[in-house]
Amino acid sequence: MPSTRRFALALLTFAAFGCAKDPGDGIVEVTYDWVLGSGCATPFDSGMQSVSQVRVTLTNGDGEVTATEACTDEPITISSVPEGNYQVLIEGLDETGDTIADNINVPADEDESVSVTEGSTTALAADLNHTPATIEFLAQVTNEDGIFQMCAASMIKSFEVEAVGQSIGNLLTGEVDYCEISGFTPVEDPERRINGLVLNRVNVAALGEGGNSVASQEFPLGAPVGAGKTVRITYNCMGDTCTGEIEFPEGGGDGGGETGGEETGGEESTGGEGESTGGESTGGGDTTGGTGGADGSTG
Image (cartoon, rainbow, N blue to C red; front, side):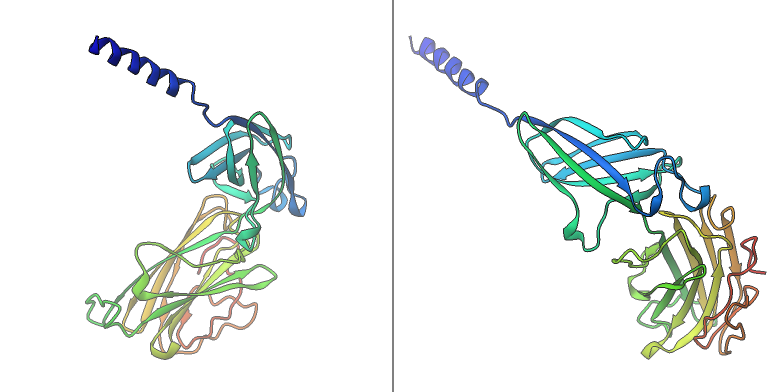
């Protein structure tokens, strides 16, 4: 009899858990509109970029639900979404899979969210804007004998990176601490000011103690790099002389590629407003100059 009672108790326990009600599922329907007149049928930047797919990601502490569909300007319906509160990220992807449009707001506390309840349909309407470009920076400093300098011993303490827009001028000026560089380090852009649809030049200045300019260089891209695209700068300094190269994606910067120039320390730049310095940049902190050659080269 004892064994029979244990078996009956096990059945009752299983039945109790089997009847427990799991959180219900709901449906989320997302509609999206476009800022600045872009969209599925209207490519960005005179046809240079267009959205081919739209991805919706719902995220909360339990995980995420994702749906990706062709860009048609029609609503996206996500079924079987577990009950709960979600942050909503909507991204427009180009044919390479890069995010070139999104619904991220500044400040971030204005981003969209939804509350999903069992058996109900929750509607969300969002505006999509161009995703900013990203500038990633990598630097190495050696002394005049070519011996690598850790940041504490280096005469160069940080790097000023300026994003310049075609026909606009300064988009963003950021500073990258030499001690904080680990691989390609993004230049912080919390206000999303690096508009890739106009970004066509990056200026870099190596700064010493007190922020004095040791050397500087201009990196012209030719044509704008494009929304959501990444520009990478590699900068090498030996003493007070720095040289660098810039890489940008295919399709941006007048076709994509890599440009470089020669850095000379201790002199004032002679490039005037709107005048290219031919890719040779000089120290002294003056980073004026034009947009460079139309082929994206630095001369």
